[in-house]
Image 1 (spheres, one colour):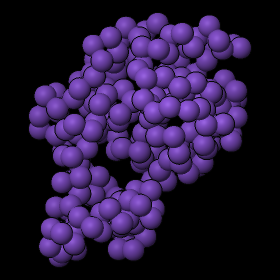
Image 2 (cartoon, helix red, strand yellow; image 1 turned 90 degrees about the vertical axis):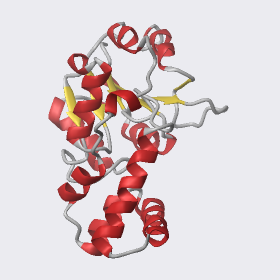
Image 3 (cartoon, helix red, strand yellow; image 1 turned 45 degrees about the vertical axis):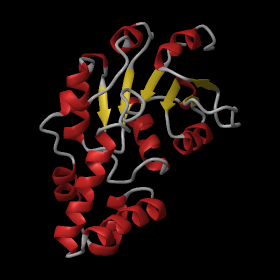
Image 4 (cartoon, helix red, strand yellow; image 1 turned 120 degrees about the vertical axis):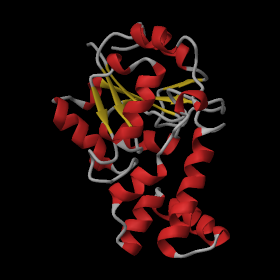
Amino acid sequence: MTPIWIFDLDNTLHHANPQVFPHINRAMTRYLQTELGLDEAAANQLRLDYWQRYGATLTGLMHNHGTDPEHFLWHTHQFPELRRMLLADGMLRHTLRRLPGRKLLFTNGPQHYATAVLAELGIADLFCDVIAIQTVAYRPKPDPHGYRYILRRHGLRPAQCVMIEDSAINLVTAKRLGMRTVWLTREHGLPPYVDWRIARLGELTRIVGQLR
């Protein structure tokens, strides 16, 4: 059975922690300052609070303030120097090309950001679809809505799918639906909802022979 590979974006296909995530966090804090009239400390605390309570700052803003999601996503995901900020494995394209089957991108980020990152990484042509937060009605992972949407959209059975994520909580939903799961992490242990644990994407090629 040829697998369908479902990739997360940030901290999976590239390393977002050093520059990209801090940039987004600062932009979100500024947005809350401007739109809600908060000082920097209060805005930053609210950003974190909504992220912890709802799984995404945007979800909290939509629920509690009626924030326009497109306005928020556009203003918090601007990257004039995106190419300089992206850090990725030099063998990324080579690794992806060695994986048999279609590849999908499934991200909690916005469409314009996801497509820009794939283009800058030089791998956009390797993905047959980009499922961004807008595509799934602003219901971020691990909400099962987006996972089911992908299955319907591409006419897939869960057993065909292999989901690769750095965030373990997002793999819980995938496993419950019957997908196979790959946790990209340097942590130890193998939770019951994880089929394979890898420390870098290059290790995905060894999984291919284990797929049935």
